Image (cartoon, helix red, strand yellow):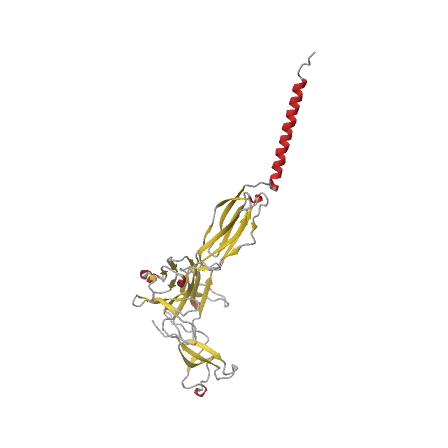
Length: 401
C-alpha cells in the first residue's frame, strides 16, 4: 500500500483565467514536491526534497501541446475527486462526491475526522430535498487525547482509533515533532503483512488491537524531550487520515518555608523564606500575605518581597525562592504570615504559613488598652466596695459611754 505522495505548491498564475466560452484550458504553474521519504508523514517544507515543474489545468478543453513545457507534468482538475473505494462504482457520467467532516470538542475531550461519500438518491430510503445530501461514513479516525499533560518519568497513553466500513488492510504510522525540529518516525504498521516496525525504543504499540481499529501507543518514561506534537496517520485504500496529539510536560512545585512558627523578642529581626522547587514549565508566582484577624478579615500582601534567580535543575525543572526581612513589634504578636504559590500545574494555589509570637515587650500595645482600662475599672470597683464595707462595719459598732 506504500505509494509516493506529492505536494503541489502553487507559486503564481502565468495566464489570466479565461472565460467559459474560450475552449483553451486555464493553467496555473506549480511544482511537484517529492518528500525525502515515502511514509505519508509530510513536513510541509518545500525546500526539502526534489521539485518538478508542472501545470495545474483548471478545466478541460482543447489541449495545445505547445502551451506546455515538454518536461513538465500536467494535472487535470475536474469538478469531482475520483476516489477508488470498495462497493462504489465509478464512471465518467456519474461520480460520487466525497466530504470530510472534522469535529473538535471545545475542551479537547476528543478530535474526530470522518470521510463521507454521497449516496445516490435512488438508493436512499426516503425522498430527500435537492438541497440536502445523503451521505455515508466510509472512514473515521478519532483521538480521545488531543491534549495530554504528564509529569516527568511517567508512561503516557496516546489514543488513536479508526473504523472502516469494510474489511481492509491499513497502514498506520506514528511520528513526532518537537518545536523547531524535524519530524521523526516512531513506529509503523503494515496491515497487509501485519508487521510492526519500531524506530523508537520508548514507544509500545499493542499489535493485537490494530486489526480491531486501535492504533494507540504508550510512550514510556517521558522527559522534557518527549513533549511536542505526535501524529497518528492511517491510510486505507485511497484515503489518508490523521490526528495530532499535543503532549505537555508539567511538574508541580514542592513548597516549603523556613519555619512553621517563630517566637521572637520585640525588635528581633528574622528572614522569612519560601522556596518553590522542581517545577515545570518556568512561570511561577510567589507572594507573602500577612493575616491579622484582629485588624482585618482580608490578608494584606507584603510589598517588599525579594526573589532569587531561577535555578535550572539537572532534570530540566526549575527552583526559586521569595523572602523578606521581618522585625518583630508588639502588634505582630499572633500574626500569621502565609506564602502563596501559583503554577500552571496546580488547580489551587499551595499555601504555607508561619505563626508569629512576640515576647519581652515592656510597652503596652494599642490593642491592649481596652483590656488595661477594664482591669483598672475592676480595681476601682473593688476599692469602692472595700471602702463601703469598712464604713458600714464601723458604723455598726456600739458607742462607748
